[in-house]
Image (cartoon, rainbow, N blue to C red; front, side):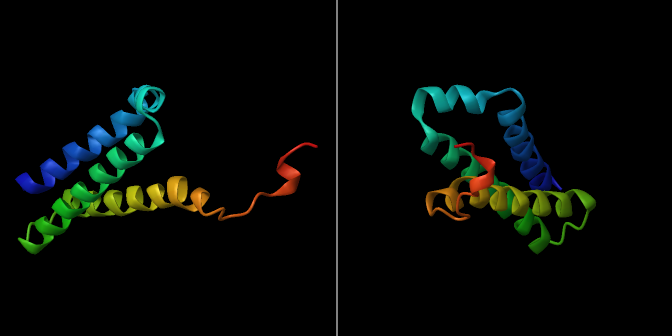
Length: 98
């Protein structure tokens, strides 16, 4: 159960990163890459801890929550940081005024 609690605490840090606007402060001082790598690192470590908890047969709702939240935060990283870098999706013209 300690592994799932550690993953949950990392996810709490991830959420506080957004809620306390620490993300904005880091973004202003260091740029987008420091923020992106910090978020990705927290997401991957918490997801890994959730999977390790499943391997060690710690079955609980907390373990499932850690895994699902880790997957969703990794998906969030892809949508927010990776897709705009590749111009996917393309700009929708009616969202922008001429």
